[in-house]
Length: 85
Image (cartoon, rainbow, N blue to C red; front, top):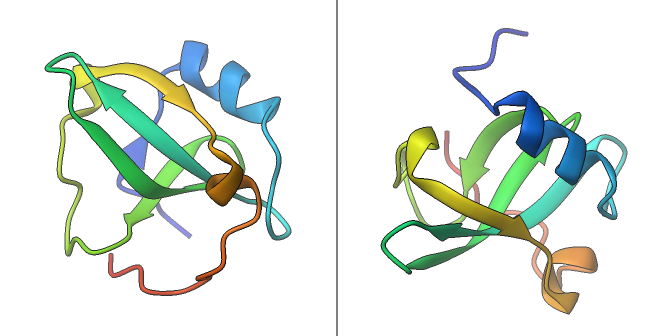
C-alpha cells in the first residue's frame, strides 16, 4: 500500500514508543505550532498518517507539527472507526 503522508524520522521514533490500539495502528493527538491540538489522528506502522477522525483530508501540514502525544483516549479509543482518507 502506498501512503500519502509520511512522518519525519524524529516523529517516527517517538510514535514507535507509543501504545498501539490495534495491530500496527496507533492513535495520537497532534499539537501544531499554532497551538491547535488535533485529536484522533491514526498512524500506521509508526510512520504514516493515514487518517484524522472527522476530516476528509489531513487538516494540517506535516511541517506544522510541534508535538505528537497520546491521551488516555488515544491509548484505548472508545470509537475505533470514523476515519476517512
